[in-house]
Amino acid sequence: MKSDHIDFLKKRAKAFLECAKSDFSRGNYDLVLFHIEQFIQLYLKHLILKRIGVFPKTHSLIYLIKELLRTYRIDKLEKFYHENIALLYLLEEAYITSRYLPRQYDKEIAKRILKFAEYALEVFEWVERQL
Image (cartoon, rainbow, N blue to C red; front, top):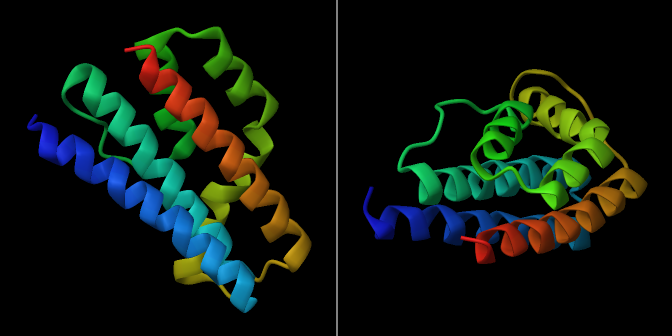
């Protein structure tokens, strides 16, 4: 896979994170969760693609992070997964409901998800430096 495609996924992921921050400041809490899900999904695909040259064609954060764990076998990443599995499932739900169901999220959960996203970025960048 070309490095420009790998870099594109990372750039797009970070753009979704910035969108989420902007959404929060405007009170669009539902979109915060959607954009954080997209940020995590694309960054995970970026890391997998960078390591093995392809990424699974799925939107499941749980599947992607498990694939990443099989690829990297890094304790810090495994700890991140186990400590945050409930938030990852919540983000998967937010991705689906944002398209098909009238589900709303409030300021408190959006704030928590933004904090989680910043932590996720730190972990993902750390994993990337291990390459």
